[in-house]
Image (cartoon, rainbow, N blue to C red; front, side):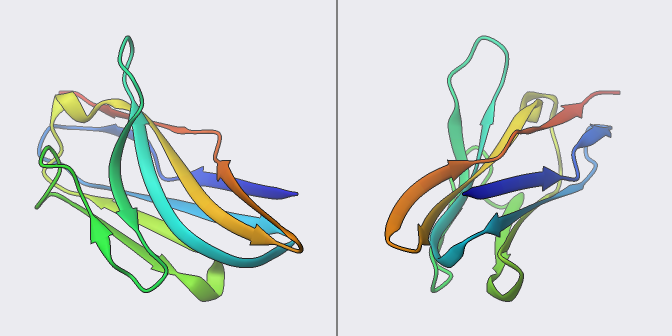
Length: 119
């Protein structure tokens, strides 16, 4: 069994910054790609940042230049640094990981952390 636990969400003013963390635990052999997604009320879940195991990153245009994803493989942790936040970034943010456990590969999700950008 694998668990992903996010932290770091909260309320921030427009133009502010937040850093999200997500740590995977359990019977993990290795972690391939990791990513951050978000879902705003009434909208579909969307990818905001992805990172492969070698560290190649990708972002949609809506966050490019403002968000930075990184990972610490020794800690099984992925981070999302969010700068210049806008009200439209308000959403529940979820992390996702492609995990290889003993004899099995699966995609796992965290429980989500709320990010609210408002003055």
